[in-house]
Image (cartoon, rainbow, N blue to C red):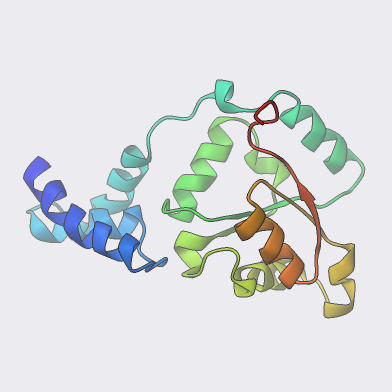
Length: 170
């Protein structure tokens, strides 16, 4: 199995170099299954295990309380994420730390095949929620990357709040 995973790392690295965003860990594990005698139906389980454990300690202070307050005020919350994890693995990670139920709309680049700042990822979220073009200025996107998040959301016509990753960094 280790040899098969090593053989499949080449195509994965190649996909990352050439920014094939539709290629995620599920695809890697399907390739591993094809390269070995492992049944294809086990690929999702292997991808889930490969994505690793989830810890409450990874959450920033106040995240759960803030989301609870927003939802209690009927503010819809969603996620747009650039990720190599398949969506079901991302959902499992959010569920494991108790956040999944806050996010009714979830758009993951590894499933859609494009990454932020590509406007089509933001449009995919709009389509899921049913946001009309005239309502775009009322959408607030909170992001932590100036190029991918801020420029992507602005290009989509959304308002943006920038959250620095390391608030005490210079």
